[in-house]
Image (spheres, rainbow, N blue to C red):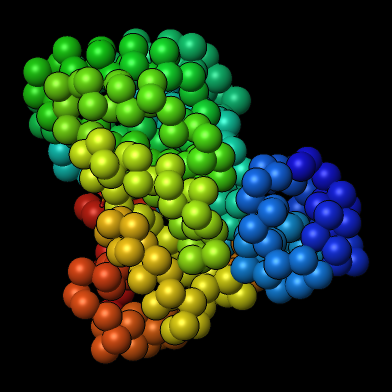
Length: 312
Ligand SMILES: *Cc1c(COP(=O)(O)O)cnc(C)c1O
Ligand code: SF4
């Protein structure tokens, strides 16, 4: 679905006023399977809120910028970010299966790196030359929008670099399009010498229906560890019941909650902000209700820091 008005009609709500403010620079893009998991007629549905542009996106808010986490400064080769010790992140593609309104890369200058998406060579040369790099993260955009043949080829070339031992994939595709979990995908993830780790992005339990659950179970049954990162979002999951339900749902599916991210201050997303104090209070309340492994680490990203910073 690529039109905000059609989306509203499909879920049976009136179109919010002024929503084209955000649509212009970051168009609506949502798979129909995801829309089917929304509650009909509810403008506050937690899934709908993640994808429906609002007039507030046009507000200019101090502190909110186009490059909130210093991605531009961290680029060491076209499409390659090296911020943290031992691991690098490949911005493998500008394409996603969905446009999340709070996306921290909604203004990422993908076009300037356009050439890279056809040529991994400069990134691979950098990885090869730096023996401290143990782990390569495929991100984007969403790497699983790339066909398996190309991904398998990239995995082969990374595996040929002796000091690389782990291959991590950051993806929301299995949540948006569970049919993407194919035998070919599992085949190259398991076929590589590298240890595969898949990090999902789920913010609300309602995003994981039975169909998605079955796709994720296939990955886990194949021996691929699954972690989840969520973003703390006002009006989506900023209450104890939603956060506990998310962790319970993930753990029931054998997925470990990894990070709960503080919203990155990206221009157009200020209406999703939950302040640190409230976030820390929610996580403390989660800790009182759940086993330790079901409580994600609440973190924020600060440009120039040596790692994601814990918030307590
Ligand atoms: C978040 C991020 C990572 C991964 O950090 P972990 O704490 O290992 O999950 C790596 N590189 C970049 C550029 C990142 O933004
Ligand atoms: S899936 Fe991730 S990268 Fe893609 S729009 Fe959503 S938050 Fe951004």
